[in-house]
Image (cartoon, rainbow over all chains, first blue to last red; front, side, top):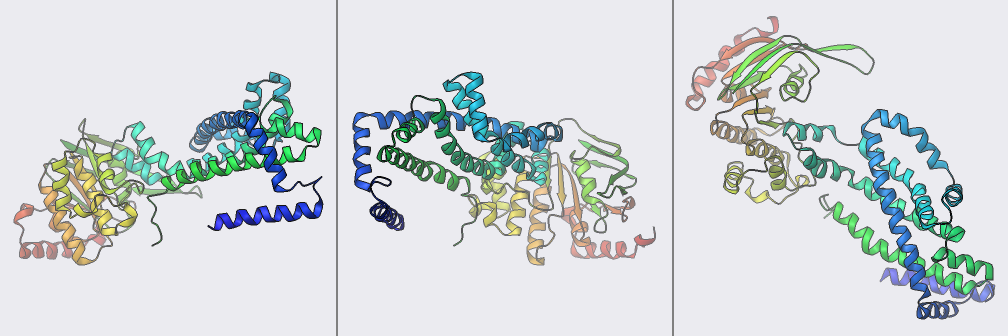
Length: 245
Length: 236
């Protein structure tokens, strides 16, 4: 209910602003909606959203898997940490644009280059978060697992992984929002489809209704994925915590 | 099954780089079916000793010989349960081969039946301790280590839990090593009492109680306690 109210408020503000600023710069909601419907009818909206989502999924999975493994290693093994730390600082502070442009120059304007560039941008934040998680592992539980001769796999699944879970969730949450932002830049600079590409086209043609139609449908997809996938996942992970009565 | 302990020293470096001796000479042997009690002042290195015996700390002088294939059950000072697993899962993870009837019997003795599906955060300390006991007994250990399992419980509860521990220890022929501060617990549960000095710990005195645990009556227990309290351990 509160969400609906908040959404209505957003539309109202937009509408009023468009009346004040003028249709040329900020088209009113119905104008954008009609472009959205036209794009959906032609199928272009779904093809572009699909292409973007596929890139997000691939880059996100790649970065999470690799970043978690590297972060865990760096948190557990001090040699790995000393070796990896300068690289981590470099990657953390490297602007996304540099990575994307270099990837396109070195690997060509290909899908692999785009996905790799997005993944590399997200990787260091996952590493940093998981490294903190690995450092915070409770040695008392490790000892318990050793004393009771837990095999490696069981110890990892039941002792280590649940302790890392909040860190993985945090890395996924912040990483996903980073990937949402970067994927469009990568598409804008070097892909022939996707939401980023369409926004680039709209920018060049100064087609503001098209630009808004894609931006908003993209935002809607992000919201749906956050509410339907990320949040239930987080709730499930923390179900063992005592809930306030 | 036998445990031979022959530790000649254990020290560690503090954060400031200073060397601290925790253990001096600690030598004893424990046989199957026997309950050894480590009795000594706080901070004398009992927990360090237990960690060495449990194989959690290999950094010491001397040697500890354990029978090969020996199964270890350990009850730590804090319960050390997995907060994200239920009571039953906690026990089954440590003891995957435990049978349903064995587990039910164990939960019965420890009065945990109603708590099988609770998470550790929902348990009181006394209950969590009992889950830790259930976990250690469920693996049917050859060597059982109990690190102050009755500490910080009120007298009535500690007494009940002590009886439960006694029942469980008697139900299986294994080596048991108990750490306690409480002379009463030591005399009621132990067969051999090792009195430890303050840091660095060495064994000051070994008291063997001849009467089997089950047959010790209140007068005998009081008599043993009276004799032990006359030992001048501080000046040994």
